[in-house]
Length: 292
Image 1: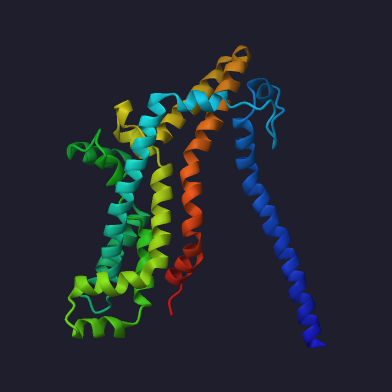
Image 2: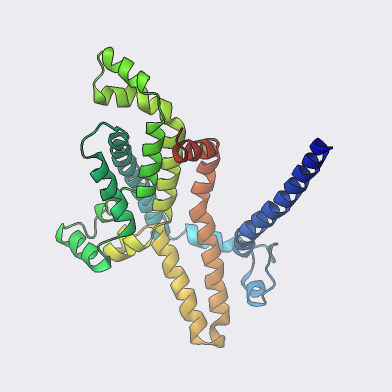
């Protein structure tokens, strides 16, 4: 009878859990589906507020318009370059720092950990950061985008915890066989850390791909802008059109249509990459978040 009650309770829990998660999925997907529908709809249906989840008046002319803009592809190429370079630098620095912090016998380890945590809680502020980047001569260069956020402390702590969970016997055996610290890291630790590395690469890549404020702050040359600045300028233009009055409603709707198309073209690479690393996602985060 007890087993039956527990089974019924567990089934009730599963049902409630399924309903809640289904609701979360619907709420999450609705804005994205709406953007897809708007990107393939004609402006007159957007003006009339008739576009919800299904495109009205199938339209791909806006896609042709956006992809024919040379500046869009210039900014798109910049985004790819910034994301690849920034992710590579971030992974190198984060992996090295996390591996060092995972060594409990290291002198000054606690100080190094608190230095990292301190930067998570406190920052120098926007103006001091700008003065620093400008004084280093990094403005209007790729380095002003990829270096200021090169290490995420959250990612650092996750990788540190993961490295601490690896058996020390493996590293000691490798050291006895003649491998130095770098050899142990490259040939023993990293091959065993594919899950957490794939997860951190995803975190960093998505963060850098979607970032726009750093580029907006430090870049003045339009040829250096990432595609997120291109999208931001479209949104700013649409907002200005809406604020100008009802007489510009059609212009605002056209701008909204272009926004939707640009959003779709911007998120497609991330959507294409995510399925290949998704299988590492849960295991990588959980292995790095739970010690034992």
